[in-house]
Amino acid sequence: MRKAYLAGTWVESGKSQDVLNPYSGEVVDRVAQCTPVEINQALDAAVASLEETRRLEPYQRADALWFVVNRIQERHEEFSRLLSRENGKTLAESRL
Figure 1 (cartoon, helix red, strand yellow):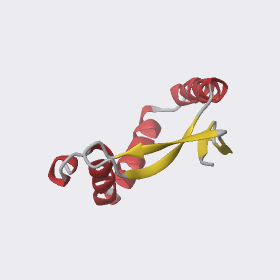
Figure 2 (figure 1 turned 30 degrees about the vertical axis):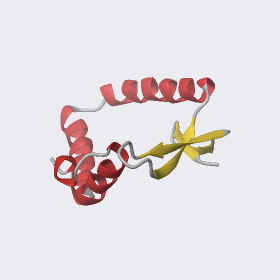
Figure 3 (figure 1 turned 180 degrees about the vertical axis):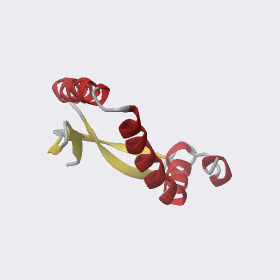
Figure 4 (figure 1 turned 90 degrees about the vertical axis):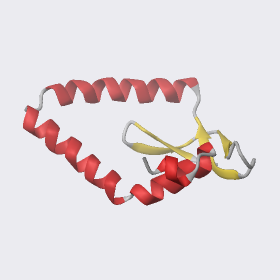
C-alpha cells in the first residue's frame, strides 16, 4: 500500500500501481492510485491554497518559489536519474 499526499497530509490509498521503465519494463517504483474522491480532495486543497497565495505580497510568493527552485537544484542529479529510469530517456536528456 502506498500513501498519497493530499491536502497537506499523507494518506493511505486503497490501490497502487507500478511505474515501469518503458525501455526495459523494469518496475521503477509503486505509486498510490487515488480514488476520484481523493483527487477531488487534492483539487479542493489546491484551490484553497491558491486563494491564500493570492493574498501574499509578490516578494513573499517569489521567496516561496525560490525556496522550491533551490530544493530542486540540490536534488537535480537524483531527479535526473529517476526521470531517466521512469521515462526510458538517456541520462543526458534527463539532465537538461
